[in-house]
Length: 64
Image (cartoon, rainbow, N blue to C red; front, side):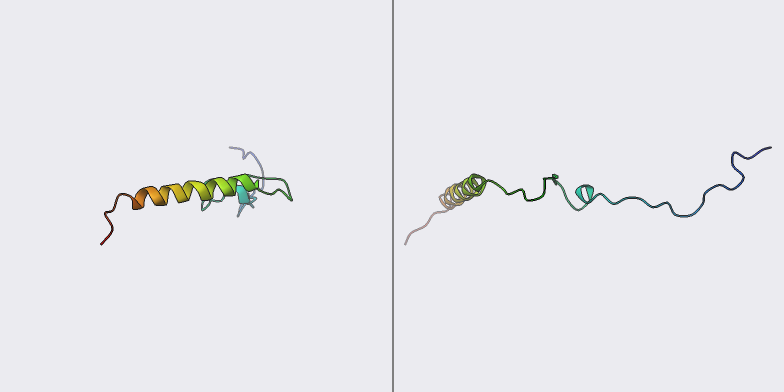
């Protein structure tokens, strides 16, 4: 029998860590350096959350 290589490589093999594919991050996207989120996304999120809160509060009876 002959071996494929006289001295096979053993030990730990370094694996490059890709920060965009960490398991603790669900939806991460690579963006160029200096990228900023458009202000309209934040305004829309505020309006959406406000409408959801008011809608949920209307489900509970209130008053005295």
